[in-house]
Structure formats: C-alpha cells, structure tokens
Length: 112
Length: 114
Image (tube, rainbow over all chains, first blue to last red; front, side, top):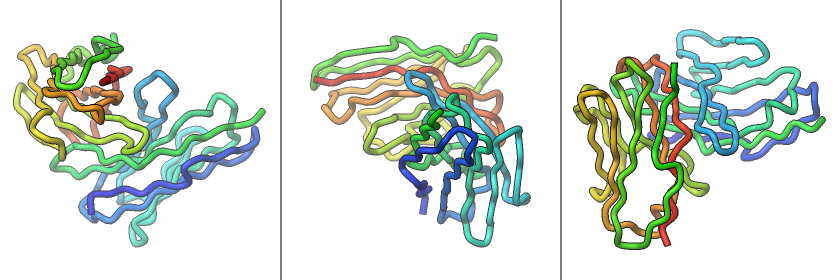
C-alpha cells in the first residue's frame, strides 16, 4: 500500500516534443505529490509538486496532472529540450510523516 | 546560501566493517532525512530527524542507525557492512517537518562494499 508505481522506465523524445511520465499510488492517505529531477552525479532536485485538491499545476514547461479518483498523477514536459535529459522521480507523502515514497524513476533522453 | 553537503563523497569499505556518513543541512533547516538509492530498489527512505529526535524510520535493519546534533548536522552509521549496502546515500534537509516543505537533497555519498 506504500508503493508508488512509475512508468515508463525510460523515454526517448525528440527536441520540441512532449514527454509524459505517469505514476500510480494505492495509499489514499497520500496528500503531497512532488516530482524530482536528478542529473548524473547530483542529488534529486524538486521540480514541481501538487496537492490532491487541485487537478493540474503548471510551472513553465512542466505540468502535473492529478486524477484523485484513479489515484494517478503524471508529469508533462512541453517543448522538451536536450537539457531536460535526466532521471525523473515521482513521489508521495502523507501529512503526518513527511517521508517521501519514490517511484522507480524514468530516464528521459531528449534527442536534438 | 550553501546547499546540503555530504561527506565523504566516495567511500570503499569491506564486508563486516562499519561506516559513518555525515550530512550538513542548509543553514536554518531543522529536518534531515536519509535515503538509500540503488539501481534495483530505487530511492528508499531510511529515517528522518527533527530537532535531534528520530521522527520516522523506514524498513531497514537495525544495522542502519543515525543521529542528529544540536546544530542540525546529522550522521548515519551502518554496522557490519554487507555487499548489498553498496549504494548512493542521500541526505535531504527541509526547514520544518511539514509535508509541503521542499526537501533539498545533497549530492550523496557513494558507498562501495567489497
């Protein structure tokens, strides 16, 4: 019940295309859903986060879509750039712990 | 403002040894969490400290322990190392222990157990 399932494991997108990464969760107590971006040799960095009381949040080229009834959320990267090539992790946490449960990660490659 | 720092960055140990990793959070941050990252298991939560108290613990054996000092710096210790402990150990700090507080990750300590 603590799992967060992420797909796809890897993704190749052409420059200018849309990258879409999906996550699903089981624990309905989760109430905070961040996305992290990790470059090789670096720690993960927060990209964007959403709470379940909104269905969509946009920050620049990055958008989170959230479907509470389906217990799914996704990251859309519009106009993908080679600099977006990294590993992306979705995560979830509950308000009484602050501990992040991470998905398995998606390695994104944006081809020029 | 300086980011989260972790020392050492790389470490090689042999089975049966013990190791201590250090994490200095961002100035003013009081919450420190530790995560283990491996290719097979991904990012897994180890434990969280807030104001020198362990507030949450993940599903790791008792060989994994940690502590936090009054200046919020944290250490984690792994005793009787096993080959499977080879991983990137990440520390993250946040201002307060709130679900929406951004956790800022350090670059990690890469541990290799031979």
